[in-house]
Length: 348
Ligand code: NDP
Ligand code: MG
Image (tube, rainbow, N blue to C red):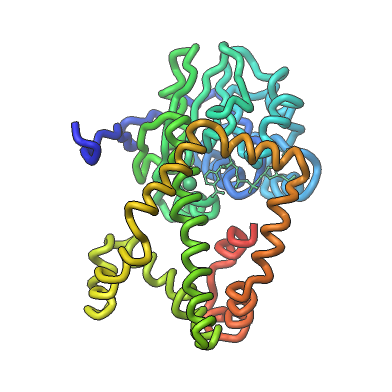
């Protein structure tokens, strides 16, 4: 079988039986981006949902949205399914302090991302089912699509199955949040974690931000106005990405001029030297696979995030950001309205 041959197992609504959740109480731990969406979608799908939190902003919001809210320990005690939707870097402490001792034997422990299982920050007892239900989209989209009668594609992974029902429960859970309407792809938490980290580090966040910074700096250093540079290397990224998202690179090439397409062919490989960039990416992948990256990130959180906070402060001062902020505040598209939910997500 070739490396580009498709082989992922897919599931749809016909493969899911929501009645598997009848009589089961689901505790959603956390009520942020994913938490509010899972909780509300499951409730609208007829499930018995409670929320586990600490007192504060999310607690008040979940209460205002009509949920029964308990401490994480109490919610866990009551639950047949415990879905961990807290910040990944806090999940291990929350699990140790409030979940571990309160999980019912035969319950299911669930995640929307594999990090803590993949890197053994959380090691569940052998008598609970462990599965992942990971929507491939932010929480406001998971909720918005559900309300619109659609869904966000999800990944499913079953890691522990002592009851023999973990797969059915996971499929029902994903149907309950609307994911089965779009499609469910089978994976493992190891694969999900490694590919997710790789994508965000090399292409989506790491790669893209550095690519834009380079383009912006080169234009400004050559004497072009920063406002102009911002439009060309940052603002227009969204237009291009939307086209690719909708119809692939062909749709993007169809919409841009032939001059732009010709430039793509001759200059793309000059900027992204494939052999070198792939070697760099393989090094990043290797750090993800052997735990080097995870170890550093876990240590960074234990040590007060000194590096993380200084990089964040440094980026805030980069002219790409300050010029961009000025332009967004003073040009039309701000008023034209990016959805508030998008801005909420972006400001997280
Ligand atoms: P958010 O940061 O939006 O929400 C975190 C929630 O956890 C908040 O409600 C917060 O409440 C609560 N929380 C934090 N600390 C505690 C604590 N000590 N005790 C109880 N509750 C606490 O997280 P996300 O929804 O973004 O992420 C949740 C999971 O979903 C993660 O595993 C993430 O990887 C995964 N995921 C996220 C996606 C996304 O696009 N956001 C996409 C797919 C998966 P408080 O107000 O009290 O701080
Ligand atoms: Mg991802």
